[in-house]
Length: 319
Ligand code: SAM
Ligand code: SF4
Image (tube, rainbow, N blue to C red; front, side, top):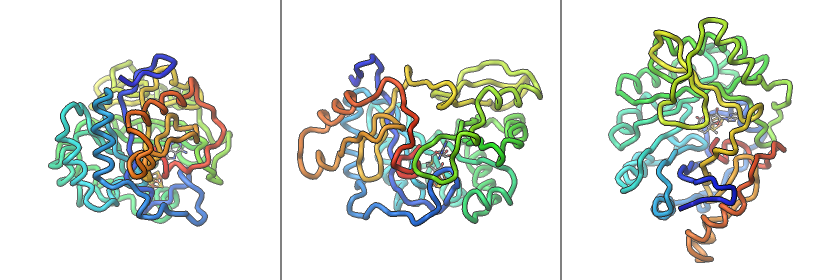
């Protein structure tokens, strides 16, 4: 079992399969030149599977595939298929910007993904274009509808709320839960990486987001589809739910059950800590067993996050 020195049991692993992304979201990275991880340093599917098999032996039950944009990685469906057939894995999910869902949703479903998180911060095509560095809103929206039609469940929509950008759309985005069985999750804007865009004034605290949503109709607390750090509510009569994630104003470190692996195999114990264990040294240079690497991660997992800006951009960590 993976239990850290503060008594938290780790059972959730988020794996970034690529640092590449077609989008250039303003909150995710600096829009300057992006230094790609050389292809030879990215973990192969065999290496990812080897890590996951050890993680499962150690008690991990849930895996999320993320990126960069995971659907950009060649043959991602093959990895997913192989992961979903592993004994002991209770839950396999994927976070995506949705851009390739229209063509890939069907094969993804067949390969074993059930739970999908799609990032969608605005319903305005113009704002979407600006936010993502020039991409088409309709294509993501059509992809989402396709995923819905194919029966992915639950579908969660990640909304990063940024003052002056989409805070006036909170209610409109929340209202998607009236028509669709989706969980609309509002996330506070986090200072990760050296993106030039972040500053404290741009954070919209959870209490303010929730007050806006409640001004429309009262919310009743419900359980989330699939657990996680979100506090989840529902409007009477709605098909979907509304979640709030507050890494800044009310952290949830005491219940943190996760580790992260970057595309080049750095095991991170906390989103906000740059202390990492290089799994490639264990896989390629035979520094020791992967079990030893996981137990080192438990030792570097901080009790509470430290919000100083991390060196890495979010897209190289995976969110
Ligand atoms: N490309 C995929 C996507 O956008 O869904 C997966 C990777 S992305 C890094 C994972 C999540 O991190 C997304 O939901 C994104 O909105 C979120 N994210 C990125 N930068 C963030 C920030 N500064 N604060 C809060 N969430 C952020
Ligand atoms: Fe790409 Fe996702 Fe980051 Fe946007 S949030 S730049 S889609 S990795």
